Length: 384
Figure 1 (cartoon, one colour):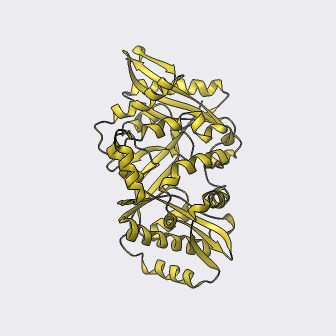
Figure 2: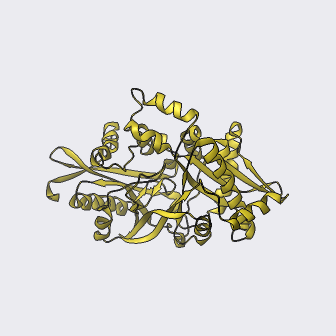
Figure 3: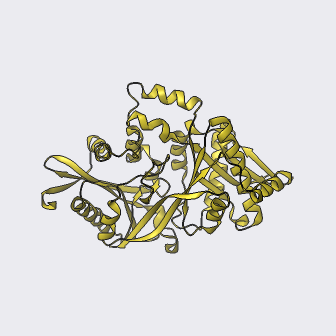
């Protein structure tokens, strides 16, 4: 069967549109797949529209059989990732693949082989995947939690993909977790006592971001993020072009009371970003803002009412990590944002993460507020 499958490189704008269109056919009967806006999906794979390409390169591939596209994959190299310590997951000789979709296992196998060949030709000796395409976008393959839709900026996949990847000789290298939290309930008494203590501490200030100073606030958060996450597995520093692009994409769903910066003695030392789950708004649009999708989305953005909030990023500067102060800052930011989420946006649940399975500090915070794991993702590796 694979003998009838041809693999070709994506070269044209039309090819990129075909690349984006494939999941719409493969997942059309999956009630838990959220169709992305096609314009956003195209932006991800178009160098001129994605700041990640300022330090990375990629090749996309399509699989065709009997005149029909039946699979796709990306192979990519992040030059910043190549400079990171090997003990943190990336490092010299490490390339990635992602954006993988296929009708059958034999199609996947030849697609993966082509992606691996491209990585070898580029001098890579080890492959990680799936990573689509930056570690900051949609890393990992969903392996648990197929029964409910992903939140904004999280991935979905077919259950059979896990077996296909492992049969190709890949082994799990890192597990990523997301946590589900009922935010209509108050936190346990011990957490509330920690929050109350923080509120009485004159050294601590938890403030909302000022959207009128978007670039300044983004720079503060970026500084904390690059310090707080610098020792984490898979860390690659975010660059100014990426921040600029992310700002354009996320600014419409940035609400001041959902993003908090914690200051200690007047110095920013922690942050927490929370986003209304945009997937709830775009799911009915079927990937297109036409003819009236743009109007529906615009109305939603003016005053979103959502069931779910997503917490994609949270960080405390390295010098405070593992301290009592770090926990106090985290719990206080979480509580303030919880109140706003329920009272102003009608939310009833939050999804926290992703969190590395060996990040005991963040896992402890998530479990102390009585959240539980709802989705599990795996990043795989293989030596080429």
